[in-house]
Image 1 (cartoon, rainbow, N blue to C red):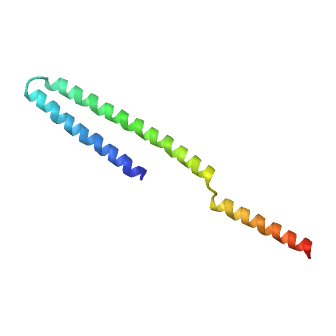
Image 2 (cartoon, one colour):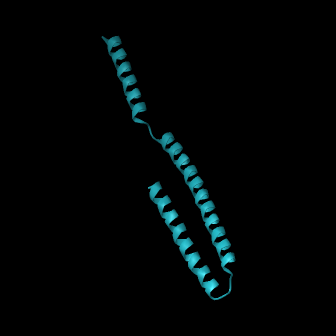
Image 3 (tube, one colour):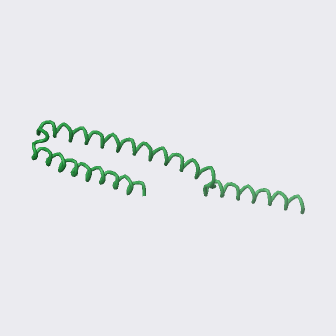
Length: 100
């Protein structure tokens, strides 16, 4: 699920880059912007997109850590359950020995 989210986010960034380039190309064609200015703008937009992707990845990592921590606090692992069951079996055996 996390990988799907990241893939979708990257897809949106790429789609956004293509749309931005189309818009900038239109401005250049109309003479409202020079080609070198347009390339600088595209590069800035790409850099901002990369920064945003990195920021999102870090936020997702932090959320994952919180979810993992919460999960471990609320639920018992199979190993913990088996350890408790063994302890109960030991105590039951001790009680049985004391009663007989």
